[in-house]
Length: 369
Image (tube, rainbow, N blue to C red):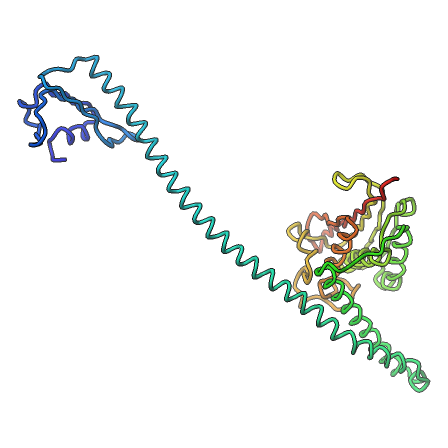
């Protein structure tokens, strides 16, 4: 537009302009190759209160537009402006949608690449755990054999210091042997080759076995292990050895994170699960430091440990004692092979208030024939 012409005046004023005879108007600039139509009307097209264009009509004769026609043109211009704005918005949305689609496709591919890399790393980690466990198992077995021979040697038995030394090494070897077995369990779970041998199992026997494993540790740390409701539970179809291992890992975790003088409770009852139907539920409750809700799922991942590992004390049942971070992952894998589920509930982690936590294990009851 040129300053002072009709379009410039419409943009500046935002008002329609009517020229009765363009040949008599100073603001009219005739385009040479267009015919001369004397009557002209121009109406602004608005978008967001800003003039975005103009709708114009002409007629050959002078002073050819009446008020009704002017009102009609103004109304049409309003509708045309809405349609143009909608078209612009649609085009903008379409272009944004295409851009977003390309970005999502790119990010999805990046995530897929990252997932494939992580999957490969996880498989390599599982393979390494399996190989390392097998390689360690043989020398540890040999060590245990020779240590057993030394422990039974009369010349060793008469020397109290030597006896204590051998017992200490034997205890450490047993711990190593247990870790190696845990590594193998994880490898079997990841490879889906852990096959339970199901039989009709009494839960009370499983719980009592786990209780007996920690009698000495419980006395040393003045922790009470209570059993409630388990005696009344019906039998389930389970692999008793694997179930003992699953419960053992949960109980030792409760002991480990409960300060001296605390209480661990194994509670059992029947319950109907929305997905599994009638089940046996075991709850392992403790009066310990609790678990941050952000960690409720990740603690069941292999090699995960809560807190700073370098600050952990040694010993499987000592307060905040360290470990390989395999126990709860093994428990989760075993419970999964029993078509059950395991999870934890805790309001948070606090070493002063001791909110404690509760682990839940549900295993379906045998279907009635």
